[in-house]
Amino acid sequence: MNPLGEFLRSRRGVIRPQDAGLARYGERRRVSGLRREELAQLAGVSVSYYTRLEQGQAHNVSDEVLDAVARALQLGGNERAHLFTLARPGRTAPERAVRASSAPPALRQMLAMMPDVPAMVLSAATDVHTWNPLGHALLAWHLDEAPNMSRSVFLDPRMRELYADWPGKARSVVAYLRMAVGRYRDDRRVVGLVEELLSRSPEFAGMWAEHPVSTCETMTYDMAHPVVGALTVNQHTLRLEEAPNLMLVTFTVEAGSPSAAALRMLGGVPRRGAAPVPAQRHSVAVPS
Image (cartoon, rainbow, N blue to C red):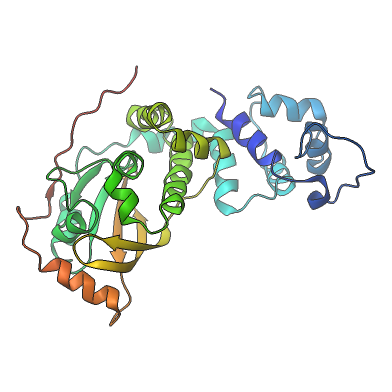
């Protein structure tokens, strides 16, 4: 695998020469995007050097070169950060080495103090470590055990019915996992999850080939919940300094809105078990 090359080729392929300020004189092109030599010209580097970069053979790439390539590819903030992560995998090693098997106690106490806000703690591979009752009721009302959230979006038919814009939600999952594979490339659960979804979901494979990239820290979703009906939620994802491979995800609604009423109704629906508790997960075989 050459994730850096895949990313560069995907971004190069979506930029038309005219969008990059390159003149076209009616020549017939085999590709719709930029050629390697055109990208090298825009970045101010030699074609041979850019080719080595795209092939994953350039080492110790300077900030100046990466910045120039990012500008030439018209990358946004998340994409630029992803480029630096892929180009310098060794610099993310300390973060990958920090692993937490469960949510810190203080975090579980926080969830206990948030009875009116759906919340959960996810691993880098989007396994649920712990959640509160409202988080369970909102996203996995039909399950007794906590799922992997990415796997659910693509392989659980109930999730297709939950999200009004399922393709948009699915694409955001792919965009996050693209970032995660670059950031946690030694995490077998992250890599194994992507390999599983590539093999089991043609829709995931198609979106993965487009190479979207996003941290998905703040998203808004319209839901059609089978218990309380329609509601709009704002998803917020917070990284945890003490456990960088864990994320606190909360779901808020506009005060006084029909969505707030639906969430209060959902909070009053009887369900088994007390939370927050460590979420029980099905074991998943990860390819070696």
